[in-house]
Amino acid sequence: MHHACDASSYATRALNAAFALLLVTPPEILNTTTTGTQPNGNSCLHLASAGSDKGFARAKLVGALLDRRANLEQKESNGNTALLLASGQGDTSVFNMLMQCGADTHATNHHGFGAFQLAKQCSQSSSLAADQHNVPKTWKKTKTKAHRQHHGGSHSRAGRHAQQRATNRTAAPTRWQSGNGQQRSDWQRSDWRG
Image (tube, rainbow, N blue to C red; front, side, top):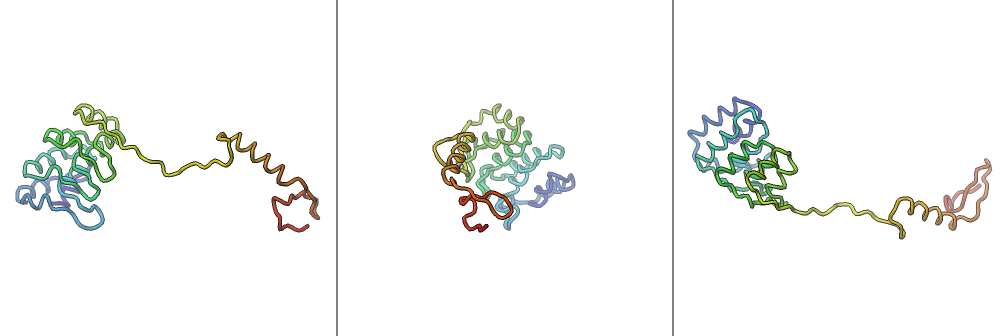
């Protein structure tokens, strides 16, 4: 069942197989999560909600899974609910189906991202769908990884270059010539012998 839900984003055969298996699969199997590395901790509802292909009636599959008591608020290994996965994929039909079934709009994943932030980062259509359903506009502020380091007091590039030129002039007041006529300063290569 899990494989059929996962493959239903790119194959109508898999989608048909998922609908057929859904008739005989007990709810506890639907809510069992995958093991392994790819994808880890996903239920059938997670796999059906995460696809972005709009041509294979995935919203109907999501609705059928929920009719068979799939857990709407179950979280996968990254803390995403089905709504968070759908909001980050751009398939508004699945997003709308989950909202109609009462998905929690305040849910966040392990990184602190909510449905509005994931929808906003995904596409304009996802963002509009989130606005139409009044999804709270919570936004997790991210910290920048790189911090620019400034040497000296100037913050502008021109100021830093002027400061470096001034430092170079005071550091190398004496120049001398090598055997081939090139001028060398002792601050450029102190180990150079001419």
